Length: 420
View 1 (cartoon, rainbow, N blue to C red):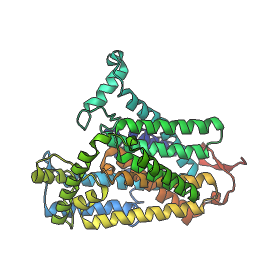
View 2: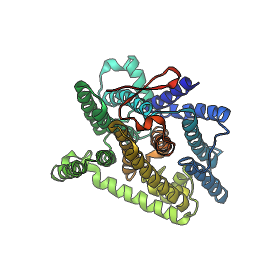
View 3: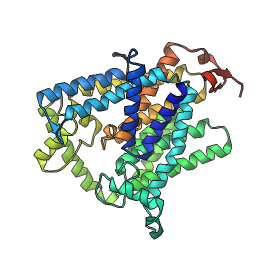
View 4: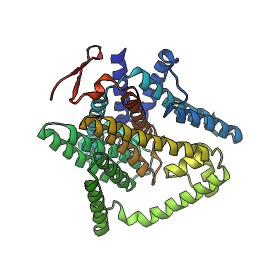
């Protein structure tokens, strides 16, 4: 059974890279497994489970105050199902996967290697070779093009159907590259890690996402800061700011900045109006787009800002709960890092936190965490941080005092400590 659970979590991470349609299916399978085998292990007060349950309650109250439908389906059903699946994912991860930190490391490094597929899709979307049309690759490109959720442009849209969402995934892969360069042992592995970092950065460039660079810089700052290299953190941050200041041509789609800023300001001001009118419990996702179109005549589906989005769609109480979740996650990631004895484990905590903060930074310009792929990856990083914090800092497992890297043995999941 444990072997099956490990394959299932690997499948979930793989599905994130392939298509926005696959993660919900895998989440549904995990939910069925959780309800079948772990229904006596549900917790109401744990983080982040309590946050997901709270949003379900808020969504029900919001819908009762102002009922709304999407294609004949009550919107509260869609929203509750979404956060219900996240809740069951957290329960399943906590109880079905007795993960050592090396298991988490191996999981994310496998996800990182699989990210080459996403980068290649972005590269191929930039070429126009006739022979591709009649090849299997051409059929794959047509599939992604058919389910594209943005207007036609020269920007790569990857496997998410949207350039900004694909860029958010690439941010996380780039941050894992930095982590891999610090924990992999061989010189060729470190060189390959930096090469993949630049590959993912180039892929971000192909998406044309400007907000992604903000998220990546914030994530890098957090990850390097969590290593204890405070001077390096400040130096790298100032260097990046100087590069953009003296070489503004590095900013993607520079010619459209002014028009984009004006458009975003209009969306944000309207979102604030919607929040003021429904400040208590919000209007729920999907219904937000309906109200926005009634007000402006424009089909905007979300607030293009993560905090404005949560405030307008779920209300002020949900926003406070989200801020509390972020605060507790940061606090627990730092505590996990300080408790860990090995550099590799410390940097794993830093990498997971950097992903969370990077997506929040990207969310200043967009609202990616309710999309299937980015949302699953965002909340998975939080779930891993909280579960590893509890196993590492509260229960103090036997291996927690080891000064050497333990080797995870697959047979019966035993741990044998070996010297480097």
